[in-house]
Image (cartoon, rainbow, N blue to C red; front, side, top):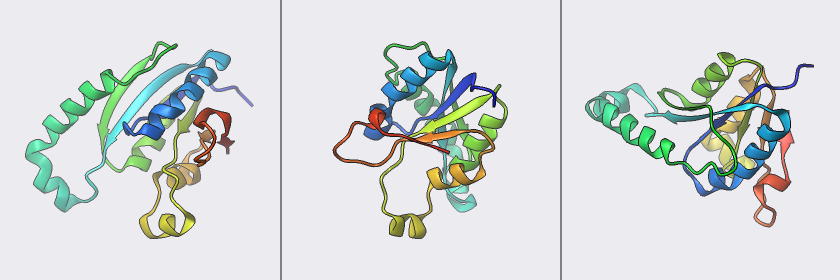
Length: 151
């Protein structure tokens, strides 16, 4: 098995996402891998997209500015990208374009029942990604970088 040479870190600007950054940085240093931050603007459906079409460019521009400000202490980030589409699909597709990638992403900590009702980007990425995926395990008591699950 080839060791990952790059890490794709989807960023949703949540507290959980920021809390996972130390684990991403540590993994990147250990693997000597580059890191790409990816933010997906997911409008959900074509009706919402049609309503937001006139504002979508501005939304993406503001999200790119926010992504440029995302704190990445201790590591130089190779790329920061904002894309539009279904989040899980965009994450899997972008990973497919990278050289020997691994996807690292936080979870929201939804219960299994809520995941069944709402769906889950993390569950979709875990199911569809042809590359290694690391997710932090949901725990209120442990820091995000002390527990992880790798598929």
